[in-house]
Length: 99
Image (cartoon, rainbow, N blue to C red; front, side, top):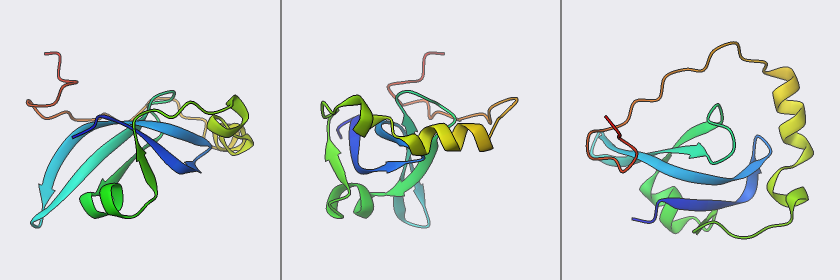
């Protein structure tokens, strides 16, 4: 499975994400995606959404800065000033598990 993905629309103002965890929930494969630029922006998505929806492109697509970091990100960060970030739990078999 490709680890780096580009969303075809911004998610909280960002478009480049890395797949850090894969789990099975109720028989469905779920992926934890984290923004390459800001770990506070993360989401869960299904296999169907990631692979078949047309909303994601494999790899990190080279985009102009105005398209990869939008004004939506500035607004999101000004509204959601986080003191501490929630923990992100990584499976033992994840490429990002360094323990």
